[in-house]
Image (cartoon, rainbow, N blue to C red):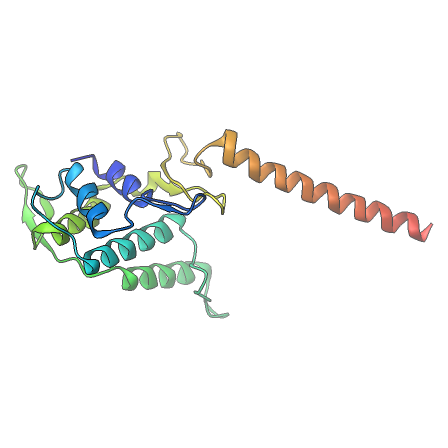
Amino acid sequence: MPLPTELVRDFVNTFDVEAQADELSSPADLALWLRERGLTGPRDRASDDDLHTAHALRDALRAALGRGPAQHERPAQHERPAEQRRAAERQRLAELPQLPLLVTLGPDGGPRLIPADGGVAGGLARIAAAVVAASWDRLKVCAEETCQWAFIDSSKNRSRSWCSMRVCGNRTKTRAYRARKRGSRRLQGSNTDTV
């Protein structure tokens, strides 16, 4: 089984936003993906309900990694930013699918989460449990809206915004530069009209 942080990243990346390509487009795809990572057994089969649960979990994780309110969330005008963030987090948690987990003691005597069920539901619960063990502050989604690829921020100060500076960072900076140039041309044009 992959390390928790890598597992969460890889699961979120089963949907490529830019290409609109879904690695988990059928129950069979889901069962294979889980089996290849040691999360289920060779005979476990996924259902349409399992696939729906996987998609809901993946979407909720991507939104949480984006760390901003989802599109449909509109904070109340009187709430302070910290309250708005907590409300957005509560909303995201409420949207997570129900995946029963048990708290047990691990070999080291520390608490750990294990799936209450086996099969595909148990495999998905293992992904949910990995969220707790993952380096959450290092997991992010690319700030480029057309990308949103999940990545592990390995920078010292955890300040990376893009999955790739050469691709997504460059796209964002180029768009901002062009917008500034257009704005300065408009200003120059309006200044010459008044002269």
